[in-house]
Image (tube, rainbow, N blue to C red; front, side, top):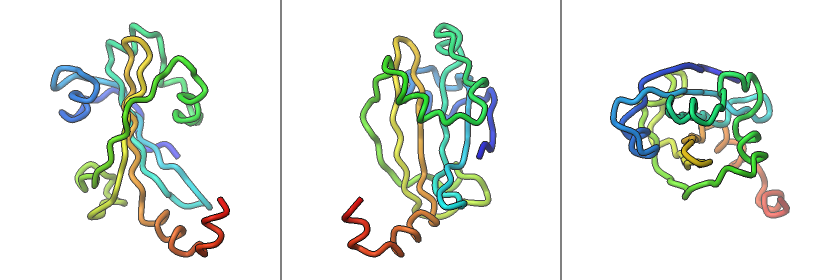
Length: 140
């Protein structure tokens, strides 16, 4: 479920992760990942403008296709280390701004192109996990 796609000034932490100068512009894609018809994850993916142009990747043409599915199907991308933290409330959509939400992010690299993908786990996913019997979780 797309929320936003377009060119935007990247946050300082995103520029640092992508090894770009502070204040760089990039393509931003924000979506909700759904499970059982509910928002489970807020995802924000960003890439620098110059690297996208050099690579020829048109993120604006993904449409409703999952970026994650695409990244994992493209063998040329290498996933960097996973970073885990509590995601700052001010970076979340107003409808989901909550304290102490956990997120993870990692960079996917292909030559000079880096795409930073951040995922924040919303309270609805934890509710489902809490309601799933322990034995059912172990079988998965």
